Image (cartoon, rainbow, N blue to C red):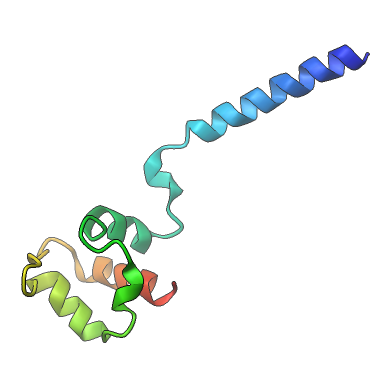
Length: 91
């Protein structure tokens, strides 16, 4: 009886691990804002906490028009900007 339980337990564990490994990377974000930040900002800005002291309007303007060496991201909608800002504010 013990060998059977061991085999079933091992098989169940394997299935659980396989199912975790098959989660697509896009589904691993806690929020839409986190996903958007990862896809658009994290290449240059690895630590989103650095923006926690900037005002919301400054962040919106910077995202849409760019600043200094940062390019503009005009394709990020106002709603997506809000999602990114909410992500930064909730860190």
